[in-house]
Length: 131
Image 1 (cartoon, rainbow, N blue to C red):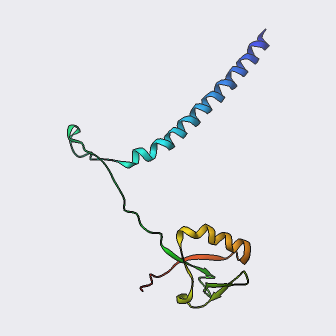
Image 2 (tube, rainbow, N blue to C red):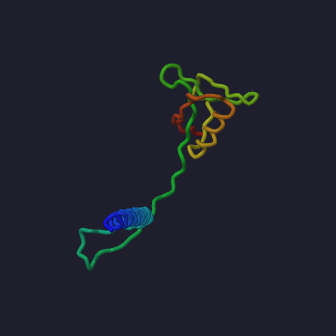
Image 3 (cartoon, rainbow, N blue to C red):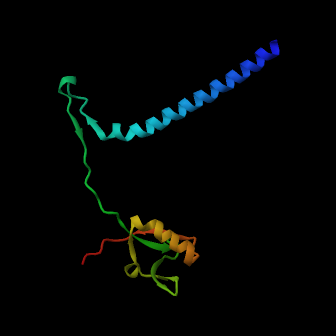
């Protein structure tokens, strides 16, 4: 009879442990959903409670910075210039380098993995060109 009690206790303990892990996971998921909502609300804590004003901060939308691609940026910098026959061409002059929006970095990385075979291409910030 004692063996049955020990086995029942072990099964019950494992079940409680699994349920507590599930509850902890749900709480963490809930916190990840609530955190951006709480962070978006700005409360003036210096004012008295009955005068507290709730306001939402709207940040201005900024364009993604312009970047250039560079190979060996420290020792002998070469910048991505053009594509010939599906292969990348590099130049020593940064002014001749093609510039991209930083938002396109995934597409650029996929291009170099697929066609260029270049593993050592780095993203560097480009200067703003004035027309």
